[in-house]
Image (cartoon, rainbow, N blue to C red; front, side, top):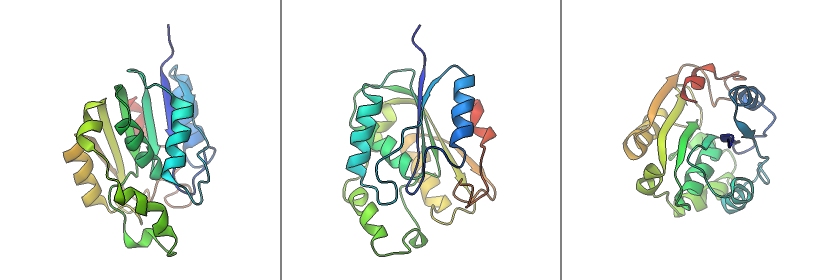
Length: 189
């Protein structure tokens, strides 16, 4: 029997060993998943093409039992990776994912350089939607960078995502929201 795989993709300035990632890795392994939390290249100044190459190397061919879990920019990487594939996955869980960012997300002028390629090359949501059995999108009502309403709307309308809104979780990070576990997400595994 082939073990189900789960990939947890951290976000911009994130690391695979901080915030809720160690907890999620443990939860996935308890449930029999082969869980992989890759360290994405240059997380403090990420380039999406480098991240997609890393995903291709780590994930390879998608499988119908795969679960992809992303945080922030990791959600962008997952959606773009799926968009480049033709294989279907089981579940996609997007935590603090975004299609639209607030102005506060760009404290430095060079920060916009990180996301500019994303705006210049939009995700083909209709393609992505057909390549996963289900989508879950988790947002916080006080995320300083991810405006709730426009992102909730995009994920609901374009992906058919099950939307979960949690209160006072910031950007689902230890420093911005106090988040080291996300127990509410486990029922979607």
